[in-house]
Image (cartoon, rainbow, N blue to C red; front, side, top):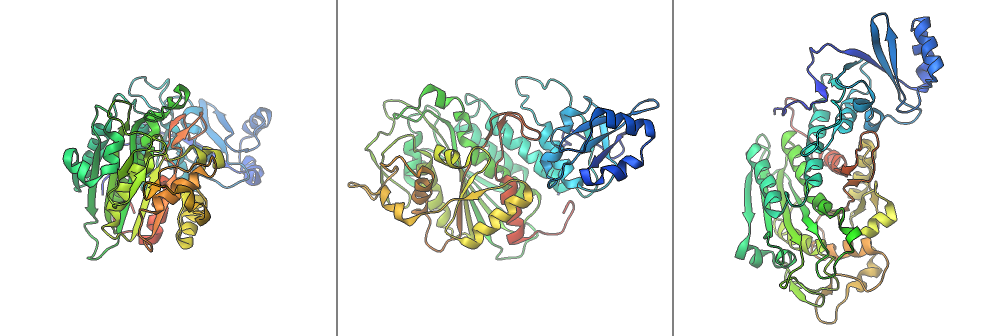
Amino acid sequence: MTLGALLDCLASPDAAALPLHCVAPAGLEAWRAGLAPSVAAFLDASGFTAAAQQIRLLPGGEGLAGAVLGLGAGAVTPWSFGGLPTGLPAGSTWRLAAPGHAAEAVLGWGLGAYRYTRFKPAPQAPARLVAPEGTERSRHVAEVTWRVRDLINAPPNLLGPAELAEAVAALAAAHGARCEIIEGQRLQDGFPALAAVGRASPRAPRVAVLEWTAPEAPDGVPLVALCGKGVCFDTGGLDLKPASSMLRMKKDMGGAAILLGLAELVMRLRLPVRLLLLVGAVENAVAGNAFRPLDVLRTRAGLTVEIGNTDAEGRLVLADLLACAAERAPDLLLDCATLTGAARTALGPDLPALFTPDDTLAALLQEAGEAAGDPVWRLPLHADYDSWLDSTVADMNNMSGRPMAGAIIGGLFLRRFVPAGLRWAHFDVYAWNDNNRPGRPEGGEAQALRTLLGALETLFGGIPGPGR
C-alpha cells in the first residue's frame, strides 16, 4: 500500500521544525514549571489557560522558539488541532514536542488545512506538521476527505453525471478494481426509476459500478455493498424548489461522494472484504419530458411508485441501487444520501441521521462515530408510519401526505427495497459545513466517513501490511 503525494500541510520527516507543545489545563502548571521564567511570565500575561484551541507562540533568544496549543478539559479529538494550519504563521513547520495524540493531530491538521482552490487560491500557505511514524491511517483519511470535499464543492456545471461516474472509474483504475458505467437503454431497463429522475436533463443519467476484492484476502470474504445518491444538481423537478433552496443543491451528490471516499479507504487500507460500490449519477432537471407528480414509475425491484412530489427524487435513485445490491446478497448493505431536510430539522447540520432495523449494527455505528469524533444519531423506522406511503394506484407513493416525520418516511420507503434479514443501514447526511470552524471549513463535508470506516474495521478487521 502506498500513500499519495503528501498533503501540502504535512512536511517530510527530516524537515527543520519548531516544537509544538500540547497542554491540557490539568497539566499546565507542571509544564509551565519547565519553562524559562521570562517565557512563563509571557504566557501568564497573554492569558493562556490551556483552554481548547488556544494557541500561543513562544519567544526565544533568536525569535520564535515554539508554540503551545491548549487542549481544554474535554476529550481530545481531531478538531482540537483543526485551527493550527491557519492559526500558526503561514508556511512555518512544526513537530509535536511529545508523542501523545499524534493520530488526532495529523488528522485534525489535515482537515483544518483544506481549502477548495480550483478557481481561487488559498489566502496563505498553511503551517505544516511533520507527521510522526504510525500516523499513516490519519494521513489516508485526511487525503480522502480532501477528495470528498473537492467533489462536493465542485460547481455543478463542471460535475455532472458523466464526471461523477468518471470519478468512480478513475478510482477503480487507481486500485485495480473493476468498473462498469451503465447508461442508455441498459439503464432504462435495469434502473427504470433512476432513469426517470434523470431523463429531463441534457446530461444523461448513469450508474457507476465498482467491484474490488482485497488481493490478500482468503476466499469467501464478506461482501460489503455501498449505494450512493449522486444527484449532481437538484432543481426539485416540476415541483420546483424556490431559488433560495437551490443555492446548495450542488451538494446533493454528497452521499455518493462520501461512499466513494469510503470505497477508497477500504482499498487503501486493504480491508479483507469484497467491495461493491453503486453510484447513481443523475441530474433532476426541468423539461418537457420530466417525470411528473402523479406519474407511476416501475422500479428494478418490480414495485410501482406513484409520484407525490418530484423533489423526493433521491429515494427513487436509491430504490433501484438498493434492489441491485440486494440481488448480490451482501453481508452488509449501506446507503448514504442527502435525502431529507427533515433530518436537518430534527438533528441540525452536524448529526447525520442513522436508520437501521438492526439494533446491534446501530450500536456499533454509533460507537464508531463517537470514537472517531464523527457522531451519528439513530432515528426509528417507526412501523406505524409505514401506511403513510400508501397509494390507491400503485404499490406505494414516494411521499407522505402528512407534513411530519419526513426523515423517517424516507427511511421507511427505502426499507421496502431491502429484503428482510439483510443487514442494512441508511445515512441521511447534510454533507456541508455552514460556516468556518477549526477543522471544518465552510463547504462540502465528508460526514459519517470516519464512522463508517471505523465500523468496517471493527466488523471485518484488516490485513497486516505497510501503514496498518
